[in-house]
Length: 418
Image (tube, rainbow, N blue to C red; front, side):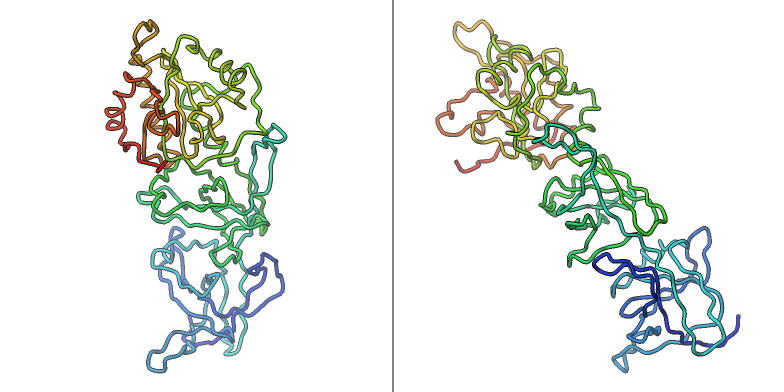
């Protein structure tokens, strides 16, 4: 390699602007960082040199004495160039993760004045979701554009991965955007994504619950524009839960009134119930009571556990239940079939079976993987108004709840100020 020092002007082509429009003509790179790598070993950069591209597209480094950027010449020869999307430099760890296929390999000639045009390798993603349940149409949609939601992206599931999760806003065009609503681009690689149920972003103190079970894998090719399809996050999680031996809602004899059900996915509490008498001690009788007598739009509970410990899906998890009068928000309702309230001259009194309690613990531990659950209580803990006299889930089952909470590490019900 010659020792000749050159100060090229850097351009790029095939780049997307902040609105997602593709430009194939070349344009000066300015106000961004450019990294030069001499070689890669096993797709890892050996030495990474950092420069800043000034308004003329020339490479600079900060000069403290001049309090300004100073043009820096580079050596003649073949090397790799990596360009950032913005004026934020890469961290040390990010530099180590630069891949050869993300870079432009160029020859710096001996000419003092020369132009080097880099090929932008970034990809624009449009995000779609499949198997979205449209309650008005009462059917699953093949696909629809994801818009006005938040996406959380993980590169891998290495230890401590949750600390490196990146948050994006999905705009009305289905594009990933940063906090300033600028369109974000990606390199060709695999990564994992979690998309929110609605327009609410996840609170920082809730992110600890993230685990690999809630993420879906995305595989990007080299195409500049790509339509990526994921399963609607709510249905994705519903199916993950059902795969753990839970019978889906096909057991129902009466079709739910889907259009009048409310979408809901912000669960923080588990409410435990019992069926309470001999008249509702089977799935069929519970369905008849809720649908025909109470005129509910669906089964009121999200899950039902029979005496043998089998777990059945009631109302789907992405709909709000009807298991506590006027107080169903944020609560997953679980019913154990049986009458667990001792009463004089009541010969239906029972105790929960060992299998029921075992299945209850397994189910709650499972739900904690997918939702930020921190409280578990009985129906009567959250009963409102005149229903304060509520005894559900029965004294026998209610007295078991402290030990269940301790075993599955959940807190007691808190006062909701009513």
